[in-house]
Amino acid sequence: MKRGERNGAMEHDQTDVIDRESPVPIYRQLKEIVKRRIARGEFRPGERIATEYELCREFSISRTFVTSMNSERTEQVS
Image (cartoon, rainbow, N blue to C red; front, side, top):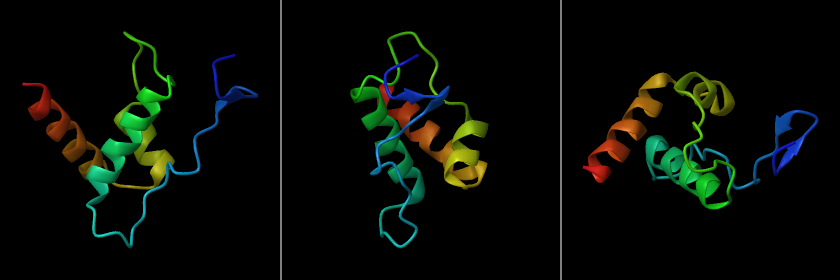
């Protein structure tokens, strides 16, 4: 079982929520959540992170937000 895992399902920090009332865009909130999860060691080097579908389902958001987050992350790496 991985760190933070219980009965086969990952447990995430309670701060891993999208605040729909926040002035911060949803895709940026999502980016920060992914960064926190990486920092907490939920993803090991070389391990895949959650798919777009998984993130959409977990946070009940459209794929547009996930795609925007991925685009911004890719621009920062370049």
